[in-house]
Image (cartoon, rainbow, N blue to C red; front, side):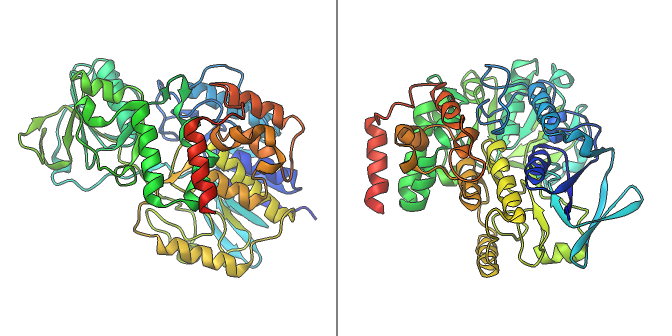
Length: 494
């Protein structure tokens, strides 16, 4: 008998989960509170934190699923093209007919060996549930003394509610935060007519340009080699290599007039942005330390004089928010604003038949790891691979709990390879001697995860060669001197 699955959310995570569940013979129903597929990528007010002029900060190759390529050669895409891509993907697998639009899920609870899903005044029972409602929907606004007194004419918003620079033309704007949305908005305001732009931050991050020396930075930053290095090398050596890559690509912030970051790139963090540091160097963006207090339109910082602003924009991240889970599930997962206990962000041993998609905080593109997580989920439930032993799941949950309180940002390559290994689709270097260098130092393109294991594709080698070669001759098996040195460090550590 075909098992029913409620998939909550029709964004990238929900769509790719439903596609792979269908392939394993399940009967998914997608619940979507908005009027179309795409999740954040719809750009719809109240359903999305994307503004009309936003472009991806991840490259075309790494912002795709393995079954469908983009129809453009542009490297970084406007959000409208991602929205259209997701619609084509949903049509390709007949997912739109399985989606109930305008249907907000209010409650998920256990019912024996099944699950109850409450929505729009009714309740349905499903054999399984996948929660793919999104990780980036509830803005985290930090406590700032006097924030409620701010009376500048442009008001206070979060980056989730930002809809473009027009409302800030000729105005003095304070942007708070040091991650991608804060830097993107500050750069846009500085270029599109704001009178003055100040960025306030708790710490200075290193800033990696989106494109350097003709190569998208996510092709260099998020590689299979980086995962193997994380597995085998001393953390100080990994820190050194990552910092070297970032500084070579874009310099260090103090060279542009920004504050000096922590010498450790792990302690400082990295944000991807093309224009921010050059705009600081031009004096079009001023960087100040974190806000100490606010009184009316006046803001005090940790470095001296007050400043007066017309508007404040907080790009300070998001809280984890899954309000429809009942108290029993919430207690089992020990959910708070940052965490839910789980085995690799997906399963919990005490909640069989319930799974999560995309509930981790990540640097880098989400499409590739989301597809790999969906395949692990579907292969496990479909019996393609054996389920993880309960004892192993409990060890994974305990390990996650032990990391609570530590920085939780996960690099895209670590997430992707973690799920690929779990699903049994990590490409084997020995199987592809002609692709060895590309598989180590090239982009983690979705096609490379269709080379080996379940659902391998005959054309995957050709596609991966094309994607790896798009921005340089990475498909040559002649390692550069640096790559040879880096690989020798891995081999000598084994």
